[in-house]
Amino acid sequence: MGAHGQLQGLGAHWELWMLQQGGMSNHEALRAATLNGAYYLGMEKEIGSLEAGKLADLIVLNKNPLENIQHSENVIYTMVNGRLYDAATMQKTGNYNKKPTPFYWENPKVSGSFPFTEGMDVNTLGIAGEQCSCHGRH
Image (cartoon, rainbow, N blue to C red; front, side, top):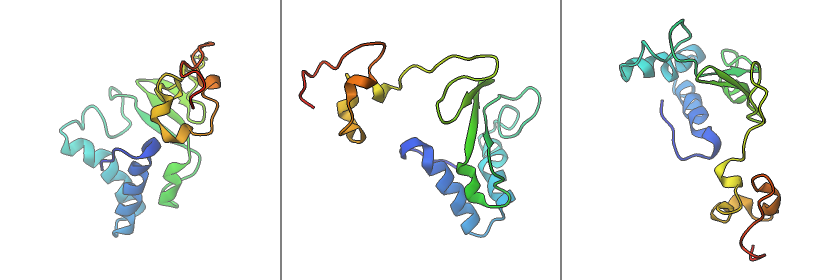
């Protein structure tokens, strides 16, 4: 499975769903998206399944994708390098209660490059009190 270029990683979900639509069971589609992909890349010892010693990058779902493959989009937590994040806010949780810094598209210096910010007050999206430098041109 591979997806790129889609807003907020939706392509990975769509590809997973299409594997199931193509005739795979939900379990087979999930395996193709995880362990089989890792094996194909020669990285099955590092990624692809939950085992001691493997990289701790995973998602925690609120609904079971074995019941309905489209439940894959019900992510409540994301773990990256062993750090757990609330999926809705990307705030570290658990041992780390640290608020996230703004994403690059939330920086008023670059937000004009992203059409989905149209109509937003980019001055409120700045980093720690920074103001937009466009002098009201947006």
